Amino acid sequence: MRDLDLEALLPKIWAGLAQTLQMVTVSFLLAAVLGVLLGIVLYATRKGNILENRVVFGVLNAVINVVRPIPFIILIVAISPLTRVVVGTSIGTEAAIFPLTIVAAISIARIAETNLVAVDPGTIEAGAAMGARPLRVLLTIVIPESLGPLVLGLTYILVALVDATAVAGVVGGGGLGNLALTYGWQRFDFFVMATVIVLLIVLVQVLQLLGNLVARKVMHAR
Amino acid sequence: MSTAISFEGVSKTFEVKGRRVDALRDVQLEVERGTVFGLVGYSGAGKSTLLRTVNALERPTAGRVVVDGAVVSELQGAALSRARQRIGMIFQQFNLLQSRNVYRNVAYPLALAGVPKAEIVDRVEELLEFVGLTDKALSYPAQLSGGQKQRVGIARALATRPDILLSDEATSALDPQTTGEVLDLLRRANAEYGVTILLVTHEMDVIREIADRVAVMQDGQVVETGSVYDVFSAPLAATTQRFVSSVLHHVPGADALERIKRVHHGRLVQIHVENRESNDPFLSRIARRHDVDFNVVYGGVSELQSRLFGTLTVELLGDDLDVEAAIRDIREATGVSELTHA
Ligand SMILES: Nc1ncnc2c1ncn2[C@@H]1O[C@H](COP(=O)(O)OP(=O)(O)O)[C@@H](O)[C@H]1O
Ligand SMILES: [Mg+2]
Image (cartoon, rainbow over all chains, first blue to last red):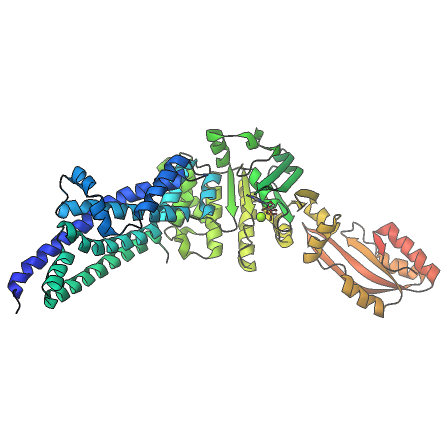
């Protein structure tokens, strides 16, 4: 019945795991840098803030609001011409990283902005009272104070990326999710699917644990 | 003594959604260098707004604020930044940086002022010793009690050796015991470093504990100002009287007075007592001379800035003319006011 024994399966699982990890880490790192920068720009260009700029804020805000609700599977297809320009191809693991980075960066931008806005205005005022100029307040008070909750937000995105990589199979991104879909869905091999699901659960747990650990480290809340 | 802060016709009008709020109306006030000056008043009186004009967190819509000869209300940019480094501030909610430990919170204003690293280490150590938190240098604000957080706030505010310390309800979030400790610390900062303290509070107890002078605010105006002794012993404005009676119970309130009058039918007078230079037992002398009896029915005496003052509510019993003569004699010796008519 099974057209695959364990020995033949293992290399496929390892390869899938490696692809998933590659897609998740690369897109996450790129998205974290890009998203946090975008979040800071959003925050700084808000009304009343240091770089107040209605055009920049308005455009960024609109782009985020438009892209965020698009289902990932549709976004992959929709931006595939752009992917081809940037990555050189619209097929394969590298090609999947581009849309993954875009969605993650956009979510991170919003999360970063929210956390920056939520920084206690009292600490900002204390900074001003000590003679810190607005840029200094942004760099040495607002951003560091928002880091703790931001790490929790980033962890959420990291886990969501594992989820999104399964869809990346559509453009030949490979990975664990793709493996499960191919064997479980198309060939009704529940053993492969179960193995992959267990691996995914473990992976998500490890990432969540890591995120919590880092958050606790930067939050210093007891 | 010279003037540390002067408010010259300061007004501030906030405009919120077309509605105008006159938070300050033509405030005229001077704070002498080296004193502890209290601003007291009910919520919304404009105390915080006035305090915040001193470091230009708030800009007056009219008038100006002069600190050490500089018009802070008109300073901008780097000049304002430098002026603010000469003015420390502490807050009701402490406003410490949660992402930095105690050491780095106190070091923050020093780094801002460009103090060399080696000096910062020494200065922070000195400050933490002053506020008694040497062992908490590596703790984070979330790990401290309210009183400890405010002590960090004080260390941070004093770091750059400012001439002026602003305090906005710094003890209002603390329990009475901790409030006492924080006020002690402020008193020491005033005595040892000579820092001028301008403090806002809605608690008359805080004023009594620590202030030399006090201004009472109401509806954006200063309704009364004077030495703490004068204001407490002889409050003039109705608001001041209400504040003073909230902490001193020298005279009976309306209810107590009703009860007293129901029982005591003689003439009731309130006799002002205070530090007297002479040893003259004037009350019993007057009583004997006019053959009247004194019956003390209410009273209280307090000590403030090492001086005594108080009020005795007394029932005078005797012949009408004798009582009249006795009152005349007491009036010569001290302040008297009549509560009943013969
Ligand atoms: N930023 C602001 N915007 C609008 N109204 C304000 C602002 N700050 C203070 N006010 C108003 O000014 C008045 C005085 O406020 P405040 O100085 O905080 O009083 P206090 O400190 O005596 O309680 C209040 O009516 C308050 O609502
Ligand atoms: Mg206030």
